[in-house]
Length: 340
Image (tube, rainbow, N blue to C red; front, side, top):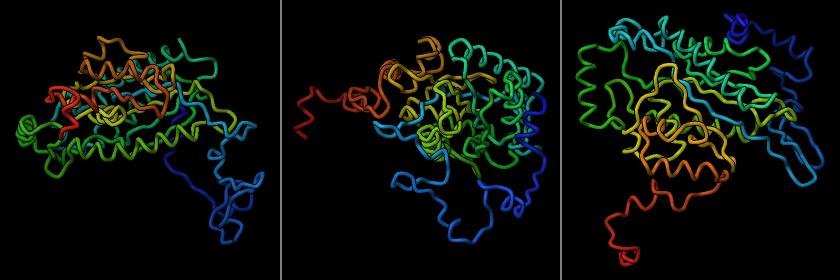
């Protein structure tokens, strides 16, 4: 296991492009031939993209979509040096702040809990695929929680810059940050933008882009080769507290007010979005009502999760209290809306 991430993240990679062209029938580089410029294959009268993961499996009843992964597991990094001493940020760039010894232990413990959960109801062919923040504490959390998984169980890793921490500014002034955080509490945690940094609303924008990438990966079944996709795949997103809360907000369409009522996950903690009976990802498939209330979810959000548990992908919750009736409580009755 110790060599796994030295291979995934080697210190340097040297590629001889000429040898790749000569010796590989599947990898082509630096070619100007018309064949390479239009690298696609005709199959049964249709043109299939040269990327094999995009070639959905044909079937007599139509195209078969790959199975959706069983879970999306959100993991907050273990305790970092900055969690213990905020003055670290005045000396060390945020992306370079690493884990403490306690943080390493938390990450290892998270990996053990994750494996136990997956094995309990994961099928024999289960695997994990990781998306990870490029920040040092994110990578270190990944490396340590992955100690609980054999190489054969890890389908892949993708470093994803959009999963980075909220930007609080470069080499922060400790005293000024105390003032800024006090101002943020009055202004609103979602919209307040730190000088030379980001607001949670800015994080929302980049997480929206990542969410679309993730949805595309799920639809394509990019985590395993065509014909080998398993419904027991587990996607693991290793990131930061606010970033993960914003991810959930974007996924479930929570309001700004509902976001501001959420609490941070513990260091090395995880929140599980598990595939429900209809195929959608639902928090209440794994977590109890009490756990979700402790996280800060309201009754309306919990009711929506019960719907998520049985709904199918693409369906809309027309009675959702989050996006509908809660905005029109000032009406005396339903008919008043037609009198406007």
